[in-house]
Image (tube, rainbow over all chains, first blue to last red; front, side):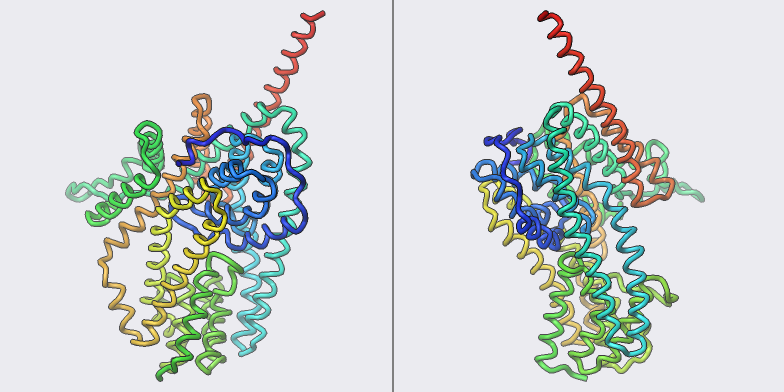
Length: 275
Length: 264
């Protein structure tokens, strides 16, 4: 069954018992494998689901609801690997409250998007250069302390951030739940607006597809990509997304069929030198 | 220098772990500063490993001038550079890195292959989820990680067994356009993920917000903000969402009041 034909809410709407510390810690540990099944289509989706399975099992005690939750948690997901527990905590508080699927999905998309740049700034552009700078010089002097210092510095920060974010965001989510459920319909609408706006932004920011075609024109060949950019920058990512949306919605195409189409398109394009 | 059976197996095991670690687990074991000395110790010369790993690490964070091209995959780049530095007695880390480039390219190809193969596997994951089979999801995750680890250790195995020349032979086994095509296809596949998200999230009243997000991102992206663009756009989106929420909650309260007034 495709994720798009799902029910809109859980069968059992009684809020579940709060998650214990052990389950939260289990999820924080599993968050290390967020990118285990990384792929071009849904990126971290399967690793994300892998991470929250301990929590979902506790929250959804009947099989139908667990299945429903697993299916919508397999939709496209991508965030910063070191900050993912922030998203986990909030989403688990919503799952526990049995919020409707549209709300959970919209909050998930809205929360995952902006973390990427923040995480890069903290980890790859600050922590790694500092830790690597100190430890590489030790290594160059022939000291085994080099790699040890590097691993310690990096992982103390990494584990601290992962576990702290997990507990903090779960508390945050549980506290906000009351206000959210009081105006559930309005909240879902607002979250959807933010979520869809983020999907629109992702289409542009994650969309790097360009074409390398030129039309020979004597001294000054016409570069097709420049013309397309003149019409609308990022026209290809937008066009492809809307085209695939149309195929999936109106022609009932499966995701696999779409992937197949893109594979053919990529290889033919690669052969002809379009990309 | 020839390697013993045990050395080859140990380097392959270490490579297997490092390949997985570049995306999952500690995301730090794979760094050249760690892999250099580990591989060096296995091959009986930890000091060379420390120096190759340390220099490569400094190059990667930009604190050392880069002479020549950098290996496209730092996991295999660091491991094979250490292997060549020790086996061929090369004292210049730059030269050892240069020799590792074909293998690092094979590492990059392996990543492309695994990310491509795993995309259609997501349909399988959907089936497992529909059956609420959590064990199968876990197995899938371990399987894909093992696949990446295996590809990487095979590349390193080829280098250890057949020396430096095999790298170039293997990189040309498939013509470049195939890799270009796969990479382009890979870059487009995320649009399938977006399209499915749109299908489940979209109703007609929201289309404007989709295009607004697209437009904002495209404008902000031109300003060169890079990764921070999305956070800033989310702030604008947040303002819109909060405003919408407050307006609708007020309207609801107002509506209720009217009803109760009528009741009196």
